[in-house]
Image 1 (cartoon, helix red, strand yellow):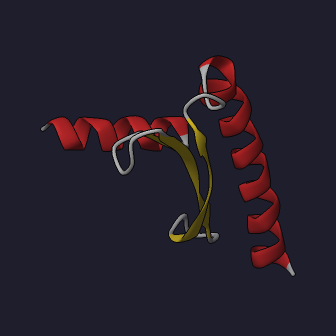
Image 2 (cartoon, one colour):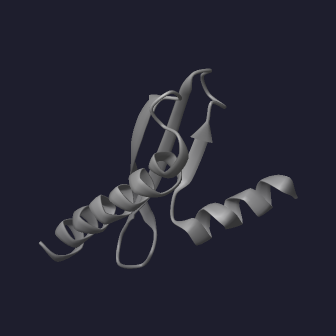
Length: 80
């Protein structure tokens, strides 16, 4: 139930956060790249040390940049 709730949050936000689950001292934000049907074709991510991936940078700035970049990639894949 916890996993399903977390996956729903990721869908709503449009990004997933890795808060040192994989490796201590490293944080990551990832966004999907989707086709016109909404199916994931892949993903892009940004990783960095916890000392630099903090606060608004981790919660807002990087996610916004990733979503924007994913949108550009999607446009190029789907309409080129």
